Length: 448
Image 1: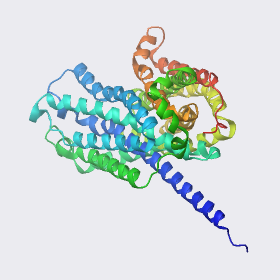
Image 2: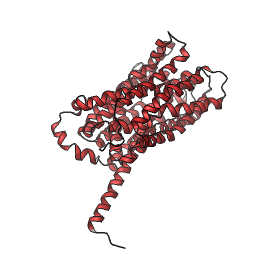
Image 3: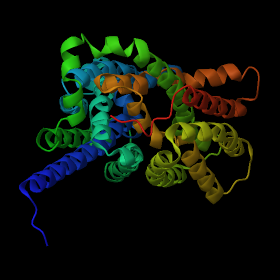
C-alpha cells in the first residue's frame, strides 16, 4: 500500500475540514428553521387561549377578533423588513453574522414576551407591549432566513442541494409537532380557568422561555461551530468594495428580473400554503366538520409528521427531474387534484374520521410539496453578492398579499357559495405558482 504524499495528506485534511463545515452549516440551517417556526407558532398554539390576559374584560366579539389578529399581523409585517435589513447584512458582512444577530434578537424578544405583565397589572399597555414585541420579533424572524439558509445551500454539494433544501424546510413540521406536544403538556399540568388560573398566570410563559433558550443555544452553535460561507468570502470580496448596497443590485438588471419571477412564484405557493395551514384547521376541520379538540390535534399532528418526510422527498425529486419542472407539474396538480380533495372535505357530508385524516394528509403532502424545493430554488436564482437579500425579500415579501385570503374568500362569496371559495383560491394559487416557475429557468445545474 502506497503512502500518501504530503500534498495528498493536505488535500485530504482540507476535504475533511470542508465536510465538517458543510455538516455544521446544514445542521444550523435546519435548527434555525425549527426554532424560527417554534417561535412563530407560539402565539397561535400557546397564547391564543389566554389573550384575554392582556386585554380589557367584557370586549365585544368583534373587538376581540381585531385585537387577536393584530398580535399575528404585526409579526407578519415585521418579517419582510427583517428580510431586507438582515439580507443586506448577510450579503455585506456575512451569512454567519446575520444568523447570529437574528437568532440572538428573536431569542431576547421571546424571553421579554415571557416576562410580560398582564392587563390586571399595567392595563392596556400590556397588550400594546405584546404587539410591539411581536412586531420586533417578526423583524428578527424574517432575518433568520437570510443568513442560515443561503449559508447551508452554498456549502452543499451541487448534487445534494435538493436534499438539503428539503431537509431544512422539514424543520417547520418538526417544530409544529414539538410545540403542540409542549402545549398539550402545559394544558395537562396547568389548568386554564379564568385570568387567575395557573395557565393564564404563568403556564403559557414556559414555552416562551423554552423558545428563548433554544435560540440562545443556536446562537452559541453559530458562534463556535459554524464557519462563514467559503463561496461568499471568495466571490464577493471585490464586489463588496465596489457596491454601495446589495439592495441596489437586487432591484436592477438580471437580479430584478429574478426577483419579480420569484415573487410571482412565491405569491402562488404562499396562497396555497395559507389555505392548507391556516384556513383548513379552523375554517374547515373545526367549523365545517366539527372535529373535537382531540380529533383536530390528532389529525394535524399526523399530517405534519408525514410532511417532515414528504418535504425531504420533494426536495430529492426536484433534484432528479429539475426544480422548474417540479413546480410546473405540481402547480396544475394542486389546481385540480388538490382543489378536488379540498372540495370533498368541505362539501361531502358523512366522512368518517379515518377518511378525513387520510384526505388531509394527502392534501397537505400535495399542496405543500413545493416548499421542499423552494429554499434551494430561490437561492439558485440569485448571484452570490445578492443571494441573501434576494432570498430573504423573495421569500418574505411575497407572503403579504396571500395573507389576506379571508378577504378574497368574502369577495368571491358574492358570486358563489362560500364553501367553494377556498377551492377556487387554491386552484388560482397553484396556477400562479406554475406561471411563476415557467417564467424562470431551470437551476439544478447552476454552479455557485
